[in-house]
Length: 171
Image (cartoon, rainbow, N blue to C red; front, side):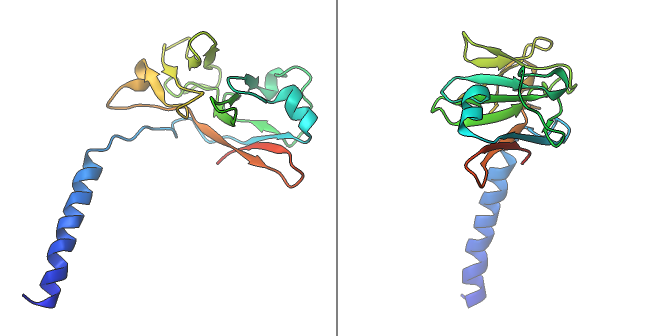
């Protein structure tokens, strides 16, 4: 057996296995929500305590055009996404953020709601349910969980700032 044959056969088998495994994977679409600016800054720990989500299973909506949350000190540079931002404290108390727009309906004014009894979120229009505290906005049921075209919530990043502040930003 030539040296090139010893490397080509295993390499071909590995490539075939990779293609077969990728063909069986289902992709959950979390980019259906149109790209929009997201920039929310909590400049002090006190501000985070008042307006953020300091604990597990806490949640708060940020919709700048509607003044939510009330008395939040928005600046001209801040933006709250396509349908608004849902800020949550996950099951470990770590902050996570999602666009409030239902990805199935894909309209800025059709927003998900938090179900405090079920500890998830749902769309009042299409009925889809999403895991917001433990599974990164993945669909649980309804049209968003369609096995052929599943839609997850648009996730935003939470980053630390240079002075210890929190920032919600677009990925």
